[in-house]
Length: 367
Image 1 (spheres, helix red, strand yellow):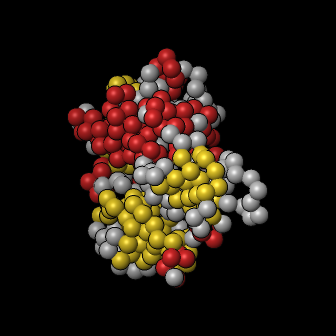
Image 2: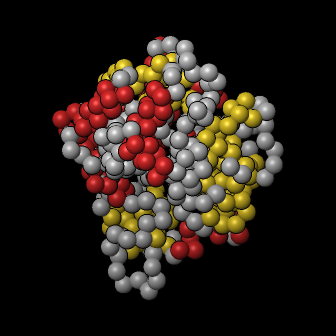
């Protein structure tokens, strides 16, 4: 059998699998059990059970916990549920709301991975005496000359490396990603062959705690003051109207501005939390030549060659260079928003990345 868990001989080894209740982590648990290692499934409860029952696209709550337990039972492995609802609310949901109030576009999935899913789950796995912690993420852990490296998944449509840029070298040493070399249909086929009840279960949405994509409703619930109104201002200084709260807008947004009578389409260029202003302009005003990064995390400091940068989860990596904490794009990049991450790559390898603190417009740099 292929050494998917990179443990060499698995007999006598113990693998803890992070089980969210979805097909990916369930298949990882099945592969771990089939390898001959002692396998323990761990699920973190991140929501109130009752409120989450029947919610589509969630994870780590209600039906998902029941699915994880049922899969573990069918595999004959131990399964434990740990209540991390308060920790998740404080470290992820409240931070998500505060970022929107500050005029930034947050990525709670990365914060979740940095906190409860890796840091806390890492400690739980250690306490259980595991030799590694395995997850269902679509990324590859490759052994290089200097140790474990993080690489993009074989299936580009499923690659989740952008969301894992903040993984530390110590975590990467302990983590395993057995699905990184597979495509999604193959994973579902394994689940079906093993008779797992989640074989055809739909994938969870990116932000699991936002039902129906209504970000504003979540922010309002946590921070009632989030609906403070303000002005919509053109980049040339003209006041075009009034907005219904910064939480309803993100950089690059075109629809929902509710300002008619304009000759050309307008986009959200930036959000000014201090003045509660939404700044809009033509598409060309979105062009960014550089960004200042903060909270940098390095997984590939041994690499000195050319690099590419990915500034949105669905964007393609583009050529760039790093000068200290300043990321300079070879060509102007659109839709670069404070609060998002800039993830750096050397080919397929993730070198690390940082959070976008502020941007420099291409037009201003040419002025």
